[in-house]
Image (cartoon, rainbow, N blue to C red; front, side):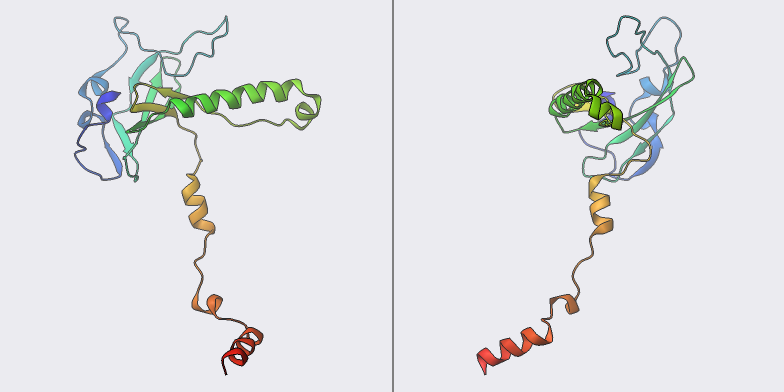
Length: 178
């Protein structure tokens, strides 16, 4: 996974690119029984938890149009599942991981509170897995949007008409300076 974040990116282009451009090992990986890789974030720590195992990685990654060019990586599980993750470099995701853990604990408290439980109050959480101080992976949440895009879609810059004073304020302004 660390190979997905090159020190000097080959291009800042967004869109689909071949996984082999970033990691030939991941591109060629296929479960054989000799090498067993667990899908990140699939074990919650319960007694009956069994980790999901990687069967293979999709041959394409989706490069995002963002400053650090994060990549969406798809992992195919032995159980037939599709598991999407965002691989991010240049950021320390340990604080993000702690905040998500705090949200999970808040969900447990809300489940115990009768008023919250009746309303089915719950915070949507996702897995954050720091790999090093500057690389980590986040569980991909389908149909989600970055906060910036939501704000930009709602924001309308003021027009010249918005900045012009009303007639009453114009008269008041003119009377002060005439």
